[in-house]
Length: 240
Picture 1: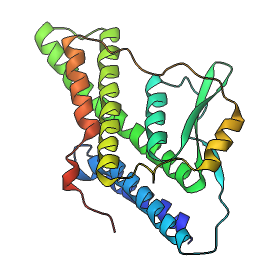
Picture 2: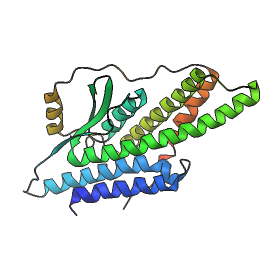
Picture 3: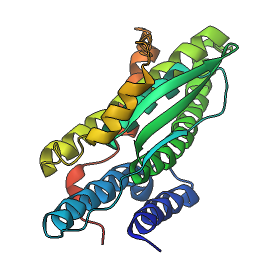
């Protein structure tokens, strides 16, 4: 097993361990996304150190791969793709056909493969967390009002939770990068940047969601932010 395969295997094993636990409130689930970034960043540091001490250079390979099938792609998947791409040395972009859209990542082969795995893991946990929150929200709403909230109310509250989750994850990634001094390590490779420019993609519309400012919406966003950010970064050590 080559170095790239070993790193990808470590990330998959980490995320599978958290997923199989089935509890988004567990430390394993909350730390998995940050630990995936740590593995990639530390491997990037090791690669730089190796290349600096070796005359041999490996041929770089850019991977342009889809993370979703063609679908009516939700705004939050686009937003999540942007956050994952920024923190895993990749670009994310959209491919549209006949009213359907799919999300792709472009980066060095190992980075793009890790980004796709992390994206899949994050989408599962966003859905899981949102389902749990909405179950509690509906129960409380019925208890207070004697009937279920409307579909539009539920959609707005759920979207607020999801937006908060992604914002929390983005904030925690930023804290980890700042604390560890990974700014240069996580910069995109020049070959990736050139390959992305050659796609000549037009500037797309923002995928940001317009948050509902109701009390329930504010509670949902706050809970989502807490779940996305997850934990105190000081409680997690270096993976061996």
